[in-house]
Length: 205
Length: 205
DNA sequence: CTGGTAATCAAATAGGTATTTGATTATAGA
DNA sequence: TCTATAATCAAATACCTATTTGATTACCAG
Image (cartoon, rainbow over all chains, first blue to last red; front, top):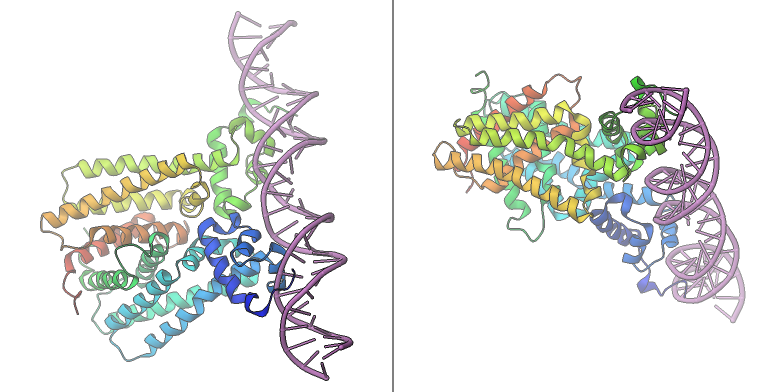
């Protein structure tokens, strides 16, 4: 056996997809290299040809996979001339559909990221990305407040609230459920906007 | 050495607290029995005296620790004669302050629960509890809708939205931050209520 | 005092699995 | 065709850490 004909060789990308799916099912720790390999008809050792640094490198690649794509699109929306409301709707949709469109990565993002947080470079890169993401959201809310279309709120907390709600979608969403990612996004965005319009009254008893 | 004087012997409870903190720092898998033991000045083997089933039993105990207390209180609120609004405020506060009051357990709850989900009994117990919790929240929202004080919404989704936002608090909250658990709960509850009052208009373009 | 028991320790044991190694073969380019 | 390289495999290796074991000591009840 050994090398298979060209049509059967697997790419990094193939492995990433397989890995994401295995991580999703079992979580990082219970996912064996062998499991990942099996998914693409390789043996565990062969994975090291594609990912010399091993399992962690694979996880990292899986996580990166999902993130940058969304980030770029979000920046675009921010820079657009849309109303804050519309911007919010769009970024919420971007985030949620990205999660629901790749549930395996989404779950890894939530559950496995901490595995890597003791590698300084990784932690930095992750923190930087997350902060940028949060900032993007804050910018939209703040813009709405400044323009008077949203009530003043604790922007930081509000953003954490919505990101929590959104990230959690990656935990419970199932592709065969009743709602599509877009459905979920639409409804949630509407609620966020309602909250942003009706606040500031029932706070102090 | 061997047995230490009475004042220095550790209790199950001591170990649980230590374990929760170690799980919080490192996650279940990277937390060694030795780490937990060190925290209470024991050796790893000694933990088996208190928890014969070992590491999993400890995790399980840690998770149980946090849950039942809140659940009972939530039921009480449900059964009370308060307005739906007030009920919602109170259960949100119960949940969030319970998370922020024991951040180690909260994080374990979010991140480590899945470790145990392949033990059928555990999975069942967990699912049952979670469903009951969700149902309690749904009951409040539904009551508000029925009484006409909340706009009609997809109750199931709404509850998932708020639970996501709330659970996520366990991920980012730090006791030395600017906001107390109660602060967070008050603001979030207010937003949820705003959303419940102002919905149903901007859904269909 | 004198057992008996509870709490502990130090030192194996044991199992799992990530990673390494050395050989093997297909393919592409000279 | 011949050779270098890429992709693969099977079979070690290596390590880590949960768990077990057998001895040791403190405390309490009688």
